[in-house]
Length: 102
Image (tube, rainbow, N blue to C red; front, side, top):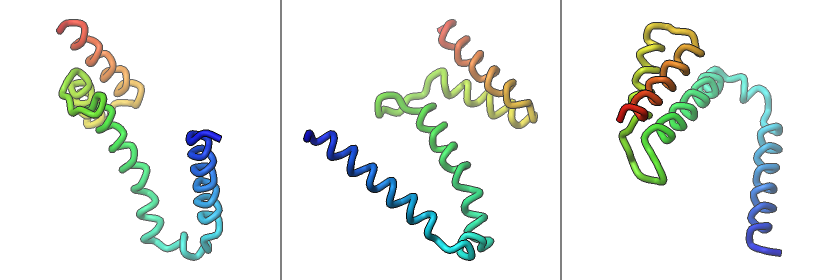
């Protein structure tokens, strides 16, 4: 067996162990208000990190390009409480326009 297959099997075992551990936690621990407050914030933090990495990096280098301007337009649209499709389309159109004209 190659090293890659050992890696696949190993990560599969780890994923199963994590899921099993998550289902084995008593419900009273998960119903604690602090745990619930933290669980509400985790998706926000993960999505924010994903947006930051996808916007400001390219092949492990920091870059400031058209994507940053698109993100800025999306933030402004969110501040004006625009609907989600309007936010996404305005950011995409801005990024595309900057790339096209520069």
